[in-house]
Length: 283
Image (cartoon, rainbow, N blue to C red):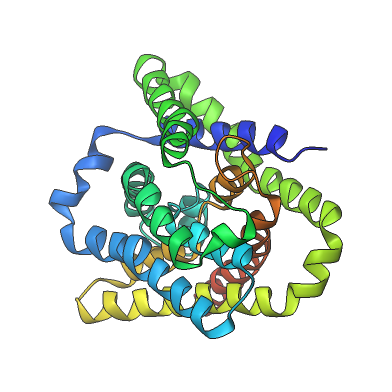
C-alpha cells in the first residue's frame, strides 16, 4: 500500500480539526502573552532545526535520514499537543495558539529551510531534488486550506464544529500510529538496521529541545503552566506533514526520507506520555 494514500487524508483531517478549534483570540494572544508565545515559537522554529542540524553533524547519517530529521524539525507543532497540554495541567489556550501560529509560519519558513538543507546535506548525490514551488503549493492545499475550512465551519456552525472536533481529536493519535505501523512493515529491514542511531537521534532531539525550551521559559519568568505547554509544543512535531512531504510524488517522492519522522512519532508519544505521567503522579 502506498503510504501517500493515507498520509494526505490524515494530514488534511488533522489540519481541518485544528481549524475547528481556532478563534480570533488564538491569533491575538501574541499581543496579550508575548513572552510565552515568542519563547515557544522560537523553540519550534529556531531551536529545533538547530538541534537537528547539530545531531546530523554528530551522527553523520546517510543523506536521506539527515534530510528527514531536518524536515521533521522544520515542521509545525503536532495537532494533538493541546490534548497533552491539558493532561499535563498546561495552558491549553497557549498550546492552541502556538500550534496555529507555527502551522501558518512554517508555510513560509519550511520551504526556505528545506531548500538550504538539501544543499547542506548534499542530497543531490542520493538522487533527491526539492521542487520548492511544489512544496509551497502542497502545504497550502494540505495545511492552509483545511485550516481555513475548519475556521469557516466553526464560525458558521459552532455546534457542528464542537461535535466534529470531539470525534476527530480522538482519531488523531490512532491515525498517526496506523501510518507509522504501515511504514514499519514496508521498511522493516531499513528501520531495523538503523533503529539504534535514528532512535537515539530522535530521543535527543525531543529531550534537548524541550529541556532547553523549558529552561528559557523559566529564565524569562514564565509560569509553570506555560513552561509545561512549551515543553509539549516543542517536543510534539507534526510528523504527518513531514511524512507527506517526504513521500509526495510532487515533492521529494522518497519514502526513506520519511523514516526519521516515523521513528520520531513513536518515541515522541512515549516520551511525552512519560512526561505527563510524572506530572500527574506529582500532583
